[in-house]
Image 1: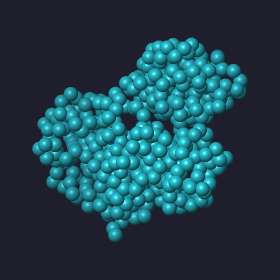
Image 2: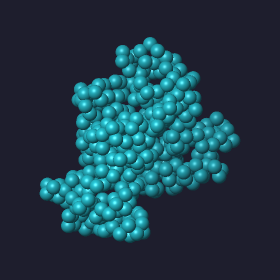
Image 3: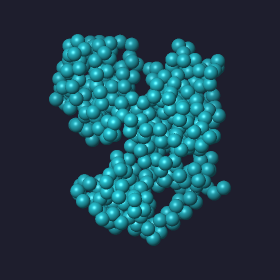
Image 4: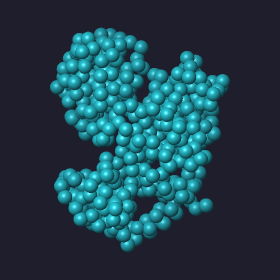
Amino acid sequence: MKRVIELIKEYINGFKGKKVGFIGCGISNMPIIELFAAAGIDVSVRDKKDNIENLARLRELCVKIITGESYLDCIDESVIFLSPGVRGDLLELTEVKKNGTVLTTEMEEFFKLCKEKKAVKTIAVTGSDGKTTTTTLISEILKASGKRVHIGGNIGKNLLATLDDISDGDFVVAELSSFQLMKMTVSPEIAVVTNISQNHLDWHRDMEEYIEAKTNIFNFQGKNDLLILNYDDEITREFSKRAKGRVKFFSAEKKLDDGIYLTEKGLYNKNELLLSQEDILLVGIYNKLHYAAAIEATEGYYTKEGLQKVAGSFKGVEHRCELVRNKNGVLYYNSSIDSSPSRTTACLHAFENKVIVICGGYDKKIPLEPLGPLFLEKAKAVILMGDTADKIDAILKNAGYRTCYRANDMVEAVKIAERIADIGDSVVLSPAAASFDMYKNFEERGNLFKKIVNRL
């Protein structure tokens, strides 16, 4: 069997004599653009924005650049790589596809190569919440068990552009969003779906489209492949009826005959205690379920020593219920990743006592009504900011919640929190909304919060 290192040369040679286009030149496409241009492939880059990323580097590479409102005019490329945020059903793309142009993505091409050559074990994770933590846990458990692991997709590196780093017997672990899965026609050997809740309805046409996109993580599996599902989530539980291969569940609500389940004592597989509650450093039931999914995904590959090592040392992923500071007896937590009510619900239920919540942001057109009963139960006070502030305020008033404050920006929000907090309180940035109204991304929002808190 060939080492994967030889595949990249074969792959690039397959594009000789063809025009290859890229729509978007951000983090997912740029490494491939560099790879193709260096190999002498006829490359063009298209983007609706005039002020595109990496413009200077693109000019150095001598690729054709088409930007502005007419960026999809006169498409003559044989193959087009789409960035995750670009819909493949745009009218112009639908027309050229009819004429033979192939629409693809980095992850699509990478998984095709892996499936054809059978060189590596592929694991992928999707879901509305917990993707990054579960993906990271799978990777860390495998590495602690002596395996060589490569992370890609939404996090990690561009896998297609770094094929020469991957060898036979390695593991690839990818986090996949609904945007990426919309265009996928190949599935990993092991697929994990953490949960499904309303999300990204500003991009997807409706909830049905969002759910269907998620199913592509297993729609193209074979009979020997494995689908791992959250038994406690009605939608993911129903996915089992559509599975092409084997299915395993994980649960915090049911003792499973074949799957990992959580009790007050810890995580069990049948009657075997794999990890006690005390073994796991991360707090919150949702984090224990991330472990359950990760253990199932690595079953047969992890060592008990490796699993114990990760459980006792893994502090979580940045921006996810991340402890920033203890200032005068008040704990400040950054959970900027919480871009939906379901994520905020999971975050706040990790705390025993009521907390002060900083909430609000970009409106993704998803229902925010669940925040009413949630904040009645879990919030000592709520500080609202961003585009969704008015909506959330109205929801809270209708629910009978009155302890609300308004802030114009993060600095003011943190100052209000500091003023109203008592010793023993926790202040949690959990926006229940995306960040695009005020920030580039959730990382920028979370980093600003941490910077302000650390200056108090």
